[in-house]
Length: 100
Image (tube, rainbow, N blue to C red):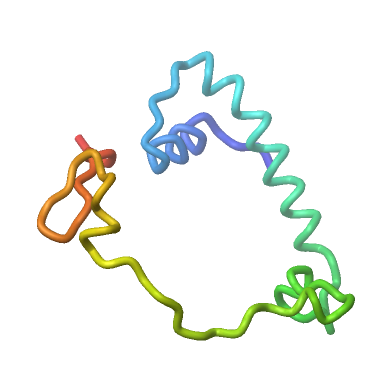
């Protein structure tokens, strides 16, 4: 599957990246290689394979997940005590997503 320059620029726009012409040319074969690898993975016969099977470690019971139980929580005042900028019951953070 050969990616086009237009497709690479579209993906960059989705990620809010501004790429130069040289960067587009640099990343085009890399992204194409990634997509080729994913296509190969999609050819695998996964019948009978449980979803997310890799996250469950086999072994002694010490690897079992902790019980889901209520635990003491911080009060809002304690949680915000060291915040560089706090509002009424919340953390204030700089805006990081801007769309022109």
